[in-house]
Image 1 (cartoon, rainbow, N blue to C red):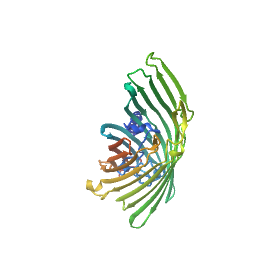
Image 2 (cartoon, rainbow, N blue to C red; image 1 turned 30 degrees about the vertical axis):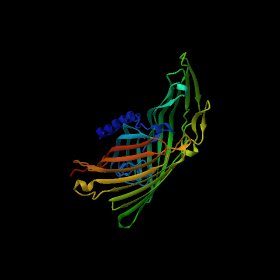
Image 3 (tube, helix red, strand yellow; image 1 turned 90 degrees about the vertical axis):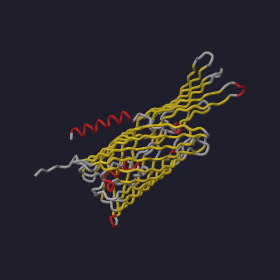
Image 4 (cartoon, rainbow, N blue to C red; image 1 turned 180 degrees about the horizontal axis):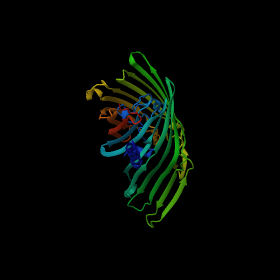
Length: 425
């Protein structure tokens, strides 16, 4: 038992060290707080990230904290996930590929007392990571201005949550999160002529909190059918961060920099988020789940440098809508044949952007996924699962860069009877 606990703690520490690595090369991560990370775990990754109405006793589902109340009383669940991806960026006739590998999550869950389950872990919230250069020709053969755009960072969260089954159909829960991270963006304009170089550095650091609330209604029907309705609310608030903008204008003749610093007090916020999901399962063999989520980014102002001033401006962000549907099928979970105990999964999704680019809506996302869960069995455990899934994501809008991402997700769910009392006759 001590060795297992030590291994879990060591894995969690390794995940904390890995979470600072950027998992994207997308130029769209320069807008807003970056690319919003998938918050789902291994079981639902193959179902394209559904989970608001997902309620099972052998998995960790952080998308709705009310699900923690379903955790099996005899087990300790620990789930770790990694991903690797290849993205093709295309603009006009130009095309380039980029590769990324990323830590996704490390979460655990256990039964605290009757009808109450707890969960803990670390998850990425947003990702920033890009570098590209654009060129503009000057008039009268005065050369070309090269503008280099780069950025790095993102927001991360560690959380502690609990779920309570108030009475048999109804459960409620919460996730309390500590949110931290640094977001940095740079723009450097330079030329080989006598024009001054201009550098803009945007940055802010976050150390704050976030609260998610969840509810699930679990109804058992005839013929071993079950329906779960789930709802979540994420509380929006200011993050206490003071975004800064540093303008460095360097004279090309004297190489003397002229630096101006702007600061906005408490200028970064998270939006109110609402989610609603419905799932239907049949004989513990077939599960179908549908989720809809709204993030009210459009009500938030965002820092912007315009006309020599760095101010909060409305209209830069917009509400984000996300819809996912997924299915999980296992032929016979109690069969002796491995292929009959494997979970087969499919999913699809659609999401609108939460930012605008030069006054126009950013790119929409269309995604599909497929995967499977392979039960791992040894002399004392047949409930741990290796979850493998593949996902294709198309991010595109007329007049902007098109992205096609192929992603492989690998998750390992340790599910052992740590709290069972063994008897020897």
